[in-house]
Image 1 (cartoon, rainbow, N blue to C red):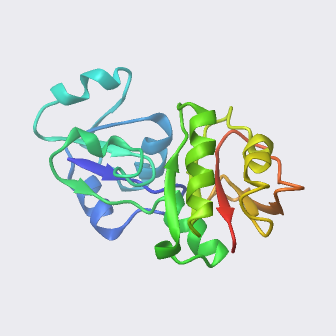
Image 2: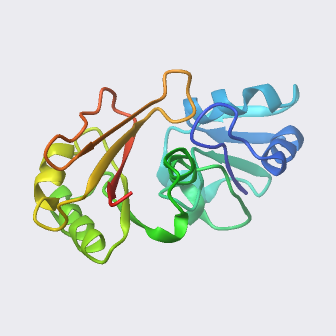
Length: 192
């Protein structure tokens, strides 16, 4: 079973808490385990994931924690039952007042950023607001430059450390895009 622990502290669903509380064996990244820790039972064995390739070989009773929502660039690919988490996508859209139906998700994490810029450009040209799953190397300024011709009214938001006490959301445009101050961020681009 794969359980989403949300994009930050306090983002676990009631169903996720119940599954974590009843688990006998939990695997997760350090940050996922920290988010779930208040709900892990005393008798539960907890292991930090060191080999993601071996996750398909875990025992049937293992609960695998996934940051954010497992089906949004998370561990949902492992199959079996998946318990959703509150994702950075849901959270960012809510914070910015952007309906999910007006968005398109672009995964640029550990991907070819130049190719991602083209996908983002295409989505913005279609009238969508691109939600970009970024990585620390994602160049927001280069993305903004690619969007300048597509949409003169295009806004860019950098949403950092969503759900954490030091959360930061900075909004600019293609001429003056915000600059990420941390490595944990997502980007929204379009008319909003």
